[in-house]
Image (tube, rainbow, N blue to C red; front, side, top):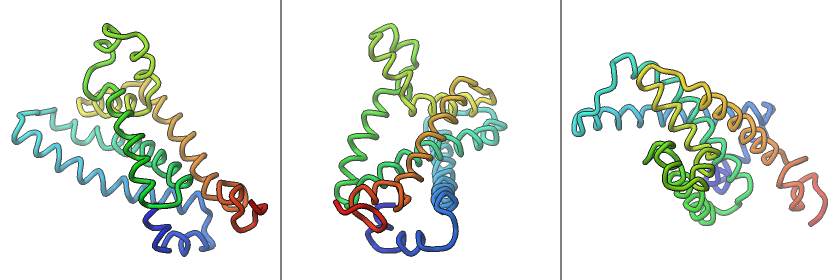
Length: 186
């Protein structure tokens, strides 16, 4: 999104008569659909080389979980891209967001193991959006539904997407506060 904004295609998209929420959500959904193809390539490689074999129906039941997790994590990136104006700064900030979210999640160790080692780290991991995305996908790959993870993912998706849509609105969002079009001089 930052790259699109820097090259001017995002500006062209944002002046269209379509509502901003529709444009941003559609762009986010398109990115998620492309990433789902990448996930299935990764799953094929994992099953070939590492003998990870979830049930066949798991490849179908994981699709809604991947869509929701992708939308939630993408909306975090969308929110950050509304705050960051230069492509070079975005890459650095994403590294300071993505890596801590990954390492402080249940992606590498289950939450019960983290709780055994440190209660503080457990609470950080328990509120981490990435942990709930991982749990939602992990359970869905085996045909199960983790209702707690689903609830957290939906709540985080709503909050981050609403904040990103607000941030991209020049009359109310970040641009207006910095003295952009329609906003007070900064």
